[in-house]
Length: 303
Image (tube, rainbow, N blue to C red; front, side, top):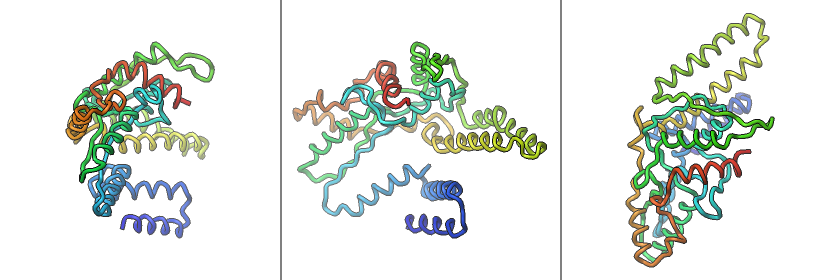
């Protein structure tokens, strides 16, 4: 049904002669509309949910183990510390700060964000497959850190400031980028006020000047407007992960009881948990971010 709705909308837009840019925006809006109608904040988690539903209805007698990792970050140890492909979620914020482009940060600093290194996710998957290879099971494993070893946005801010102060990013001109403290916006109301004063008001002024000068500043106005709309869209996309009902996302801690039981039974069963490690209690977050993750995204993803 969802696939048909997508195809019908796409065909309608093409028949109307819509340009590709407008089609892209319209399809994104449709995806968000369908996701929120069913209680999901965006198409990313909506399609994940549909994937799990599809597995549940078509698996027959097959044993199914579902592993749900939280925000996946660079590797802790293997194949070597700090390996990562591309920028992920929080890494975009870190990179923007390191380049000197981040002037504000939207989050409650006391809120917990759940991250898990990529190699720990792989190890958890391998151990789970072996554990359930010869026994009937339908089980879900949440692989994350927010319950057993939580880290807060406050920590992320402090680690970022410390790292880029001590090891500044070198720009294209060969000069180090100086970073400093940035404005913290703790809720959506403060974010909207900030955007209105710093960007939407000047945009309105530019629009009036552009109209008065016979569209002389049209290119500048369109570029400025596009960038602001992109920021607003991204904030709406990530808002559910930053806040829970408008407040700090303490409620966004993911129950990892099954994963803890898997770890315990693996140890009791003689599994080499030093080799197939996925116990996030072993992570010193300060050491991980400062000496592993940040250097990793600089080396492998910060192009």
